[in-house]
Amino acid sequence: MGLLGILLGLGLLIWFAYRGWSVLLLAPLAALIAAFLSGEPLLANWTQTFMGSAASFVGQFFPLFLLGALFGKLMEDSGSVTAIAEFMTGTLGAQRAILAVVLAGAIVTYGGVSLFVALFVLAPMAEALFRAADIPRRLMPPAIALGTFTFTMMALPGTPAIQNAIPMPFFGTTPFAAPGLGIIASAIMLGFGLWWLSRAEAGARRAGEGFGASAASVNAALDDTVLRERATTAREFDPAEIAHGHLSAERPSIALAALPLALVIVVNLLMSFVILPRLDFAFLGEERWGGITFSAVSGVWSVAVALIVAILATLAINRRRLPKLRETMDAGANASVLPIFSVASLVGFGAVVAALPAFALVRDWVLSIGGGPLVSLAVATNILAALTGSASGGLTIALDALGSTYLQRAGELGIDPALLHRVAVMSAGTLDSLPHSGAVVTLLAVCGATPRQSYLDIVMVAIVGAILALVAVIAIGSVTGSF
Image (cartoon, rainbow, N blue to C red):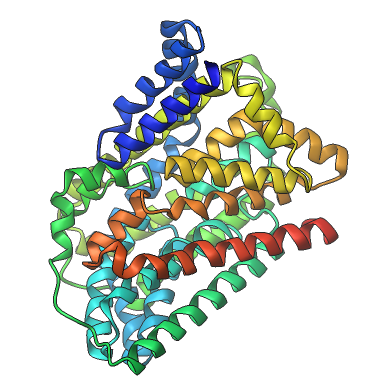
């Protein structure tokens, strides 16, 4: 009955979440169903296990959700994201429309701009560019996905994406874990994705397929409450806040627009390898600070400081372009709340399931997968990200349940924790792009496309390319180690 309870709870969570029910309600209910069928105490599992794990996730990562959403909203309302997108599309032109959209998305998301902010800015520009080039609308979603969902989220060294931050407290790593392997993985994902999209564009031209009819405005997606519920478990920005604040009609120069993005990467690098390692944090071992180690918090601190510096730079550069600063900052702060609690609820559900006696069967099966801890970690994280439709939720559930075991086994085999970090993040970012994923649903909505039209191409650039890169990283890392 215990295993049946886990499967039933998970099935109900997926079924109703896909239909737009709030995860804040579904996750504890699903957890209680699993606990009830396992004969476990309900209230204790809810208030102690579920809430304890959810609160721990919020305590660890809310600063990054808050700062990331605030930075993204400031970059949007100041016109900086639009300036960068316009520069890329203007420089490359309609002849290289797909490349322009991919690179514009990659630049802003690698620099720390939230995914949903990027989507709502890039979609109208991609539409104008694809219309001018007479490229089918159906290729807009995969082009945007390639630049925003894939290598900038999970592979490029130092990416400030929340998914890249989650393994750091578990493995004691930095945002730049396994940089060489990350660059190789990024090249594979970008190269394969561009090849596939180029092939799809050429096939459409041979078939005489043009851009097609106009679709509804991207702003229509902002009023869809079902879409909002599904989206907030997928990324760290509530799309409902896109419409709030005040978008500047004036654009900064490309140099000023890109400066905060560059600061995120540079400051993150300096904090990770130069500044924080030179300071004495022995006091963290005291009981008042939780008796933690410096390595458990250094990665989160590095990303947080980098985002703070970028926010201050954005404010200094664009103060004149942010006449309603309070509204913009309120919208950015509010945009972080529903996503953090939605993902924390998924984490709480995972904690209840992991504490049930029947979970031992699942754990033993996962750990018995051949190929060593890297393959086992990749399979477990992929499955959980696929089931939850959330890279961050699936990754945290996997590491909460099995992270210490993988770290111990990696130590016994001489595997660098940095390699575990990179494999875990990349695994979380592959099957999280299944049709029920909030990010995929939102992307299709803002592009005015349907799953029938665009999903195959999304699969190729966001799932197949990512799996190829993951296999390459595991294969190379198993031979050479982390680099």
